[in-house]
View 1 (cartoon, rainbow, N blue to C red):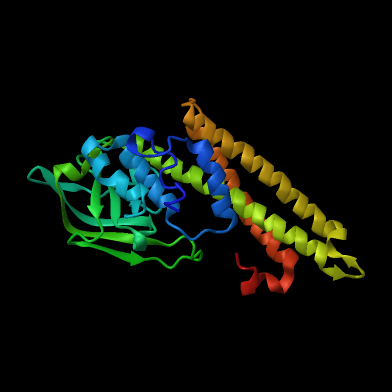
View 2 (tube, rainbow, N blue to C red; view 1 turned 30 degrees about the horizontal axis):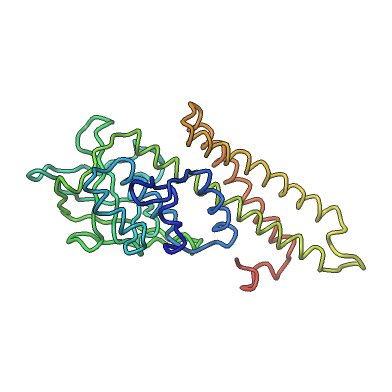
Length: 296
């Protein structure tokens, strides 16, 4: 993945990346979704974005080369509250410790934590809603541990990050505020929406082929309206997902005022339709749908 240049796709050229935008990245994410690619690619990309956009020059020089050439893997650890997916969820408080902070607490929904060498961790530096910073915490630092969660989807492993009196100095801190945190969460929603397009396309391809091959009552089952109409609905849903998601990426890249709303629309629609496509695919395949041969 690193040799192909994927890791630095959206990083500016003057920082060692390819200087492309999220519209370009969506093309790649469609394909990782199509194959349910089990990789920390999205997690690493989001962490790279955080350091690239908000980190100091020293932090960028230290981490960007390692994260773009695959030497190290990073992930975001932003959320605390499982019922709140925004910057207001952040509860972890940093206690001043010399020129830095000491962190004790947990972070939920940390994607690909078991593979990460670096946790870009959000915490509060004060009581004001905008007093939020990111700590660059190596996975092997004293006081850092993880508890894996039991996910249904093994291609998207997550964990709880445990911090026990973890010290971070001033060189490991990025003071950002709440708007950049919500921006990173929006990027994550956009990435998952793009992968959902590929998931639905793979389901449609597999199920359409099976509807042509499987014969019942003397005809391929795709001959029957009860089969071909739901597949037509998936096709329409895919086209709508593409329109919403690519517009959201374009609006983000061109700094349109409605970019946040556009991402929310894309994520809400794709989350519903990818589940619907999965259900239809299983129903159309019948019993073999739950065999390992058909688990993609």
